[in-house]
Amino acid sequence: MGRLFGTDGVRGVANADLTAELALGLSVAAAHVLAEAGTFEGHRPVAVVGRDPRASGEFLEAAVVAGLASAGVDVLRVGVLPTPAVAYLTGSLGADLGVMLSASHNPMPDNGIKFFARGGHKLADELEDRIEETYRAHSSGEPWERPTGAGVGRVTVYDEGFDNYVAHLVGVLPNRLDGLKVVIDGAHGAAARVSPEAFARAGAEVITIGTEPDGLNINDGCGSTHLGLLRAAVVEHGADLGVAHDGDADRCLAVDREGNEVDGDQILAVLALGMREAGMLRKNTVVATVMSNLGFKLAMERAGIDLVRTAVGDRYVLEEMKAHGFALGGEQSGHVIVLDHATTGDGTLTGLMLGARVAATGRSLAELAGVMERLPQILINVPDVDRTRVATAPELTAAVAEAERELGATGRVLLRPSGTEPLVRVMVEAADIEQARAVAERLADAVKSALG
Image (cartoon, rainbow, N blue to C red; front, side, top):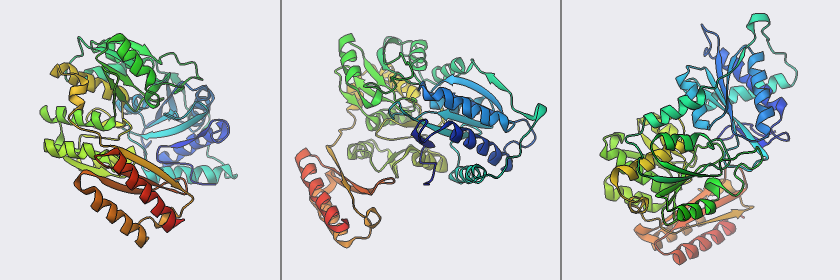
């Protein structure tokens, strides 16, 4: 059996890979590991548990709650709320642990479990490893130490979570959104109620799509992975902008009034300039991954803003931000972290801040996003190769060097081994799409030849 924890918790097909038994066992293991680490010392432990609207979340939530309570942890059930809401409430309520049940942008049959430490931060890798080790040891027969009587956990429905979280979002905005017309696509997911309510309280006129979750329709042809409906709705209603979330609402992509996509890199550029203007961009630095568009790097250089790049994955962006005190970071996918107000990516907060920038400047989203030009980007996956030799094969190193010389300062090459599959991702950017495609295809052939 492979490692259960990936870069974003435990995820798989619900009731096949991710069973009720696994959810219960991991929750008990998490409680024991945190207790051993001293997290619960001197007080009765409390956990916040939330989920997205997937049908499978109902039985998985029951399993997680049962596991925690059986281990002596009091549980606050906050119901259907975004991942960043569970993280926020874990911190604001002083809870010892947060648990979110969601598979984010994955299709409905999938689900996942994500744990948050005290303060609403993601668990350290070392703690995840210990939880997994503890779960495996006890699933093979080692008995648990179980509290009885008054020692068992109590379960409470915490209805105030929705209002507390929305109030937090609106309260941290630099200005109101009065006069803006906004279309929100909630992906029939965790933000279906939260995002429209937050935008409305902030003063925007709100039109909604994808806000009627039934447990089965999450991410189904809507949300940040399917922008067609949002584009059409923005144009039809003459809106100033559109905002699209994914299933657990930790991401946000946008659409301008002409229906053009504004991706995570462009959103990050707009927010970076606004935060610098307000004196909130600490160390004049923004953090992004190696997959961010070269156009973003060039835009930041023109604006005199420093850029730090990390490996792909929001957890690496967050680690870099926390380690060096940076305030803003994110990914092209729309996972944007504003560390002064959130401990994880927050799609609703990102959309609100983008709207606030439009309202404050009186400029259109298209004009603001025009600060960066997205260079054509070609991505080719090369399967069935030895991904471990990407950095050491001399003929591949030579092919990359030749490509970089051809592209010069206005192009970029990235060869990245997949973390989960036997393939290598070839990414090429250039000012001309045909040049980018030709170079990418040539490099893909080189990868096959060198590593096949």
